[in-house]
Length: 234
Image (tube, rainbow, N blue to C red):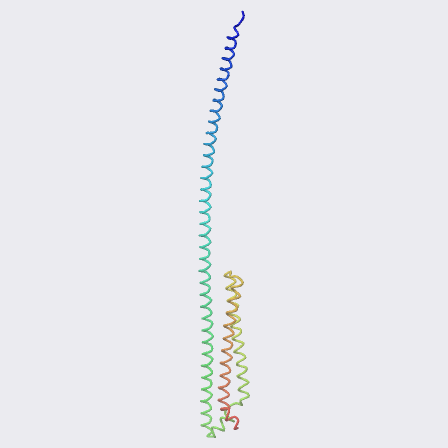
């Protein structure tokens, strides 16, 4: 049987058209599937982005909280160190005031003893002059008082002992201060500054003692030898 060429051409076109439609349908399905994949991927990426953002926010909050805690710890430590330093300063100042007051009391007691000794010596001299009925001026300058050279030697020895006692007391106070500062954990710069402050106070104390001793020696010389004009006349 012979097929009609027109029918064959029509069948061929129909088959090609069906193949074309089938191909288009398959392409549409593929496109739809790819679109679904793309949307799912976009949703997943958005979800991951949100999770990453939330994670970063949590990390930022945690970091901020840790930083706040560290700042609080540092501030508390600074406050503790400041309070400790202030208490130590007050204790050292109180100790220094105590040492100065004790030194002043010792000096006052020493001056009182000297005044009492001088008063007793004068009283003895009056009694002895009254008993002998001699010339007071002659007795005072020659017989009843020790020679000025002996008195001066005794006074100089006494001054040397006073200076030595003061130096020993100052050295002990300085050693106690340094030991207390080291026990408290102070740094070297602070300890050095305190040492210089103590040494300056001790230097002024030594100057005060030297001035007091010189004034006492001058008074004794005036008592035993008279004023400078009288010494020249004699």
